[in-house]
Length: 108
Image (cartoon, rainbow, N blue to C red; front, side, top):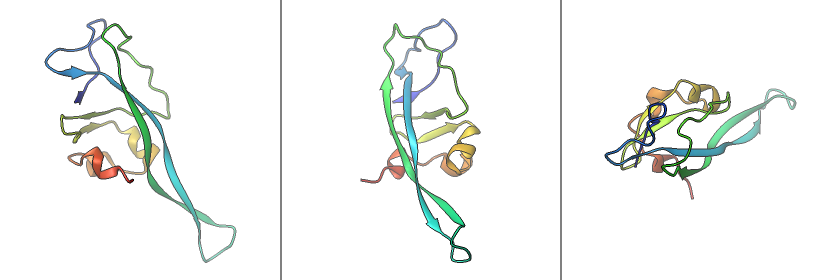
């Protein structure tokens, strides 16, 4: 499924495009640094999220808060666009994630 935000007041786009609202949180692991018992570092373990397809009559504009980022994926869930906020929220650069599938980041 491709994910795009439709133009203002235009509803969902045609041709197989749907708006998907994903929400979740970043799972991090804390570990101590050997230099000092009070210092600690964090490692990103993964993103826990769920996506909901918005119905055609739903509001197509979603307010983007500072703890949100937008991405686009093609039919096989390969990332084709990520906005710059992904770096602040996950520590990954957009160019490192583009062309990877969402399945690459799912751990069971």
